[in-house]
Image (cartoon, rainbow, N blue to C red):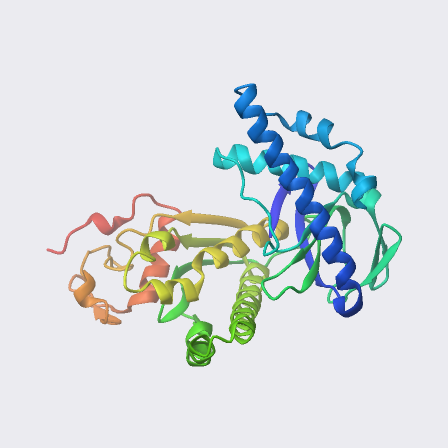
Length: 354
């Protein structure tokens, strides 16, 4: 995950906390955070009823000042909770949900004051929390949080400012996202779609029918981790080898409304594009999204619209152009057209077959 910053890029580093013994302390902090959040909700409702207005972030911070000592929270954590409450309320234009016992734990903090890194441990409020040090922190820590996942495991999230001085390769590539293969590249190679959900679908269904929620959550986590690992590997390889990356703007959200929804979600096109985007920024490469309309039916050699059209011909993976006689792989041809489309807009796919 990444965001831009005035002096570089902000990446989120995520580490699993060794919470077998210290998890109970984080649970206590999480409950205290929920009390601050719910108090902000009560203030919001009272202000809306009596003053006919929403309290600002400044109001929330002022009203919660001093509560950290009573709740055992750092003062920066209380302020971060109040500000996040206002931010969520303004974004969705309504009061955020009440955080009850089933809410996942979350403890935000300002890294410069609230934590201290000590090897494979972080010290927060004079308590030491060890974590699996899976990667070094190669930048300045700006902020962070402790957060739980669906299995109630605690993680340390650090927002780190990193430089953008890493280098990319000299290549240029167009990428056509798909379901049969995750991505077809304009150089003729393809990235396999490992179909992680399909791989564990039977085991997941068995756990769900047995009402074994713990097992079902574990399988879901395994699917997510395996998918993310694959996408990170492939996106990193592409960015390190290419200075220009062109990707089609396929609407994944729209396709989730079709019968292909399960396969589209399993492929995670949006996640793959997001990884390519922020990694391209960090490595100094150029990332471009282009309109993919007509890329599959247009001959990349002569520009004639002679390819297979419509849902009925989706199974046609190879075709011969009636205009020039060139044999095309459907996905590779689309990737080449997307790459050409980054330089010439619109695509010459507008030329009809004579």
